[in-house]
Length: 624
Image (tube, rainbow, N blue to C red; front, side):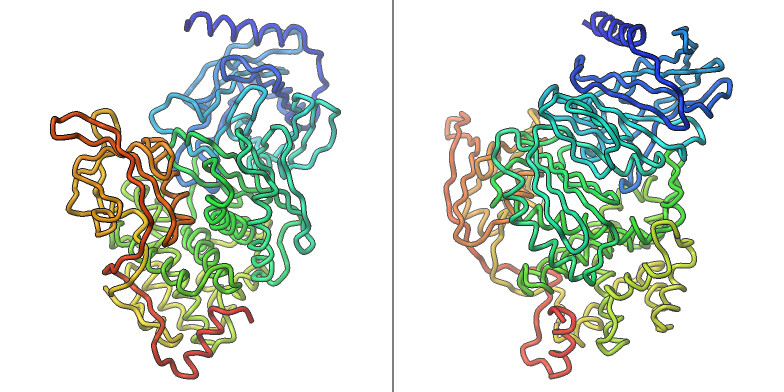
């Protein structure tokens, strides 16, 4: 079978090389892919080399990592059968140096061909986060991230790129790239350099799109739902009010003229076991579960609000490390607290400020972020973790930026409001930073804090930065929230839904068949024990009607928790041993209820706030 695959690849490439018409070399990389010709989950890529690249013995590369991701992915591992030719079709010697690098021996190289593999299905040890990879479903769907499809010659990333896709005539491309040509069954796109190309993924499928105006910008939502469960119209109905609120939150001035939401919905989950999205300057690519719109709408709104805010930072306000991103030997910025922490806080804050969620729900989200932050190693500063996030032990702490980073951002917002007596906040700070910096004007990492102090005029912020961002101090939350009529409690009783019944407290383990089972019954809460009725050693097969497997569990629970409320029906299927030791399937049908729970890190509104506290609270949490 392996020999057959190699033979097919050889014939596929050789036939293309011999029959293709010669194209003239220009100043650009000229790439082409025929989406109609998929061979064993692979696509052939052809490159006509820029005329200015005439050196002998060239080095061809694929990225090790791309902006917006904070782990090594080695995209060259999905490339095979790379060959190089001159204009007469004579083949040059090619040596693969490592996963991402090829040496091509010769001069006057005209064309390169190679095969790219579907990264979503690749059998590799560490699955690549799907929104940063490629999906090849012949004549159904193609998700094409440039970093998994197109390479570059060493130190030649700044040259322009022209990409031609031949496609089924009934397929449509969703991308933020501008189309410069093509016909009824092809598209031609152009990017000014490799950075712009990687910043613009493409999804091809039968069209399901919605377009609308937001301020002066054009918004496009494109959805691929293989079973037709969700439409772009469904998503737009849920997302548009959030986008309109975000536009107002940003002062009705978007930093881009167009933006695309590219949404792929999987009915079976993903190899990485995660769901999520990856931001780009004018688009974001979502990989989520295929559920009814009402089930996933809250999740989509939460993720979309985070990704959309990335237009501001790091895509507009960013450091030199991001502006001059090194795809091969990346140097990371110190300011993930800004790029991810501030954005995550704003995504939640905007929703309560514009009435999309209640103030109570906002405080619960803050509580959960504080609690989640305590699960990571303490004593690591945000700047230290950020600068070293690609290496151990820091890489395992990266997710804390969405918890600790967001909490620190909230504290910075409150500090700005307090110092200015309600006249200046974090939204204004980002607008002012945009005035000094921009898409083509990065800041130096070491200068950012001083620039913020210069802009605001608050020298007291130096202590804040030193303690909570550069340092490792944990904020004394009451010092920040009391002026706004709130109180923080290390632990307090609350009456609310416990959606998972306590299984999130280290209750589940995997058995020899990699199924999740109840291993520590005693850690379940009242709802898990009495409401759901779990028993020791129950194997969970389905949750809310969805298969509960290693690949799907995270997505299933994330989707469920995004909409669950008291009174909802819930069905959980378990495998349970009877008295004879035989395993039998059992369906547990129940109603979700609230229970008294002792929760840690609780924020509550003060019962009798002063007039000034109410004024400051309203300034913080209500639309002005």
